[in-house]
Length: 366
Ligand SMILES: Cc1ncc(COP(=O)(O)O)c(C=O)c1O
Image (cartoon, rainbow, N blue to C red; front, side, top):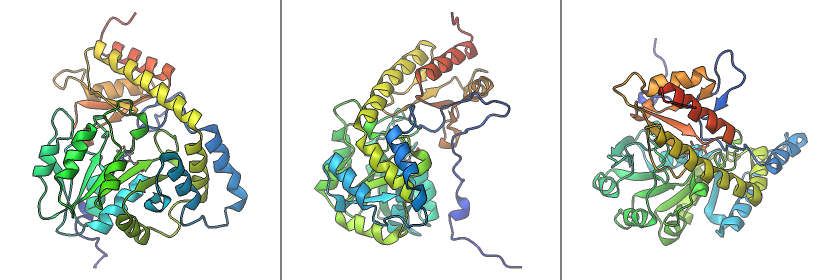
C-alpha cells in the first residue's frame, strides 16, 4: 500500500512542545511556562474581543487595515509596510516558505527560538546554527556561518529562551556585513520590555535597506497569546511577498479588535513594563542569592542554570516546582538540559517560586 508522503524535511521536524499548563489534581496552578504577560490582557482588549460576537458570521477585514493603521500611528511607521499575522509564528513560517526551499539554508544562533528551524524544515530548507558566546548571539559567528545558500538569518533580540540581547551597534554590524540577498529577520517579540537605551527593535534597519524585516507579537506585553496576533514591519518588497503568500483572512476579527484596543491602552502597557522591570530584577537577584546562575535577561523571563552534576539539577527542580503547583519551562529541547526558563508573573507568584527553590536547594529559607 502506498501512502501520501510529506516533503523532505517535514518528518525530521521535532514538533514544538509548548509550555505546560496543567498539573493533575491541582487547580491552584502558577503558570510561568510560556512568557505570557503577568497581568493578562488589558480589560479594554478583553471588552473589544467579545464585542464583535454577534458579527462572527462576517469575514474579518483581510487587510487588517484598522490594526495596521493603529500600529503605524503608535510606532510612527508607514501602515503600508506592515503586515499582520496569526501570531508572529505565522509570519516566521511565511518568511521561510516564501524565501527558502530545498537546498537553501536558514541561519540562526545556537539557542535561537525553535520556530526558526521548525519553519525552515517545513519549507524544505536546512536550518543552520552559529555558536553563541555566554548564551548570547555572536555576530562574528553568525557572519562566518553565512554561505552561498543562506537565504534568511533570524535574530531574536532579545532571544527566547536565553533572554540575552545584542546592543544596537552589534545588530547594525550584523546587517552592515550581511549580503544584500540574505533576508535579516529581527524578531523583537520582547521589545516592549527593554529598559536599556542601547537597544534596537530594528525599525531604523528596516528603513535603511531592502533586506531587513522586524517581527513583533501581541502575545507577550499585550497578553493576547490566545488570540494569536503578530505583525511585521518591512520594506515594501518583503511586505508584498508576505501579502501574496498569506491566507486572505489570516487574522480573525476578534483578534483584530483586541489588538487595536490593546495597543492603544498605553497606561496598561506602562503598568506591565514597570511590573516586569521590578520583578525581573527582584527574581534575578533572589535566584543569584540562592547560588543559581541566571542570564541578564531583557525579556519577561529568566533562564536559570542548575548544577547538572548534583541531584538538585534542573529536571529535579522542575519536578519539585510542579509538586508545589508551579509550572516553569524545561528547555532541554533547546540543548539546555541544565536550565529552566521562568516567566515573570505576579509578585505573589514570584515570591512562591523563590520560596520553593530555596527549599529545593536546602537553604535556610526563614
Ligand atoms: C522570540 C519569539 N519569537 C516569536 C514568538 C512567537 O510568538 P507568537 O506566535 O505568539 O506571536 C515567541 C513566543 O514565545 C518568541 O519567544
